[in-house]
Image (cartoon, rainbow, N blue to C red; front, side, top):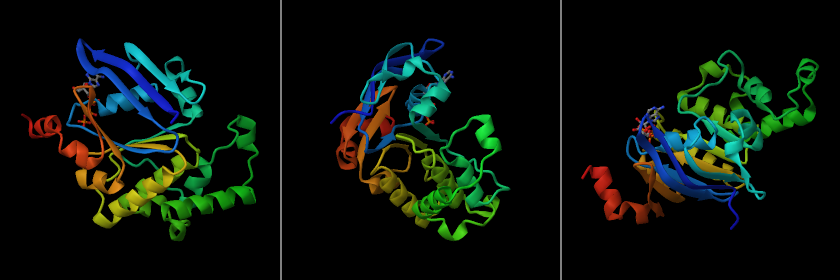
Length: 246
Ligand SMILES: Nc1ncnc2c1ncn2[C@@H]1O[C@H](COP(=O)(O)OP(=O)(O)OP(=O)(O)O)[C@@H](O)[C@H]1O
């Protein structure tokens, strides 16, 4: 398998503290991966490095078939390369409808004149309908986004990211604050999204991770402690010790 993203030997320290410690990580172009790990394991810092927010002190972050270095790009160049990031709290335009939020998010020519003279095309409207279907909000299209439930807002934001057609989607704790039914829908949505792109889900909720049914990477002290199926990693003695604080 050729990787979409290949992180190797990456280290970063903050004031002498090693937050990421010789970390290596690979993901394929259509793969779902969960990253778990105790507080302070380096999960957020890892995402910050991939998205260009934090520069590592050492190592390589290679992207795509041509092995471009993401470390040579700034945050917006990395986003344009196709790396999308969903933060924990939903950030949708609350005063706008679901339809308008999705329409605004569509991948288009962002030059000022094209935004100024932009008219919705039938193709764009069809794409918005398709995205709404994918995130399960087809019947909410004309609702104000601020009126949606927490779970629906999260799906809308995922839809807005999918509208940008990312090759890699990083999702931070999507299940937090969701009802069981919302979690189940979120699992389906992420699994579906990962059929055509790479999706990395950082999550604390083990049941949610189990339902994702994907390979799991366990981080601890800024490095990979274990990797494999959820059963494989949860039976690993070191992982058990770390989670029990031994
Ligand atoms: N900008 C920073 N300055 C100093 N220390 C930092 C900075 N960012 C992260 N750290 C430290 O690096 C370590 C890793 O933090 P990180 O937020 O990546 O962990 P995490 O796995 O995401 O944790 P959590 O599950 O609590 O979100 C922590 O000890 C944190 O305090």
